[in-house]
Length: 138
Image 1: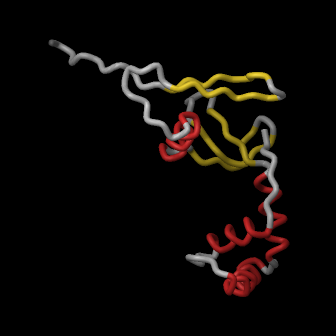
Image 2 (image 1 turned 120 degrees about the vertical axis):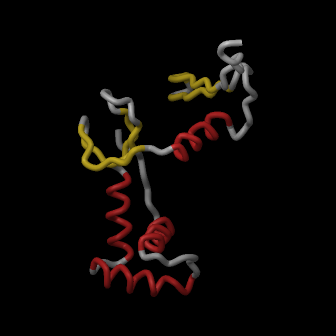
Image 3 (image 1 turned 45 degrees about the vertical axis):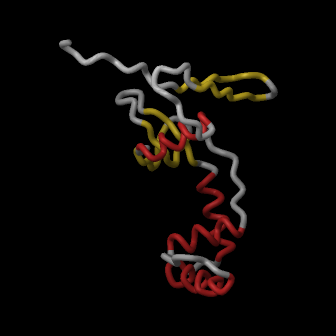
């Protein structure tokens, strides 16, 4: 389930700056990025962009059928090549996307988000907090 991607030169520049530990990029850092890429991998920024674009197209998200652990990574159909367990920050991002950043009070009906394709609802995502439970043993 690869994603459609189009990594432009600005994206590649930002990613290269991150990998090369260049803190805040400015126009003057283009030379430092080019030199860094050549020193590290003997490639220029355009080649780096092509590699990143190709890799991003194979990024996937999935769940382990055995452990129900969520992963993000690079895959071929039906098999992970490299994967990383999804952390709470990622899941919090999904919830923020689905709720459009709105807070959901405990016990409310929650928030419904529809995912459409071709003008037709394909999925409904409902996110809600459970109602508060009374303390056990009282």
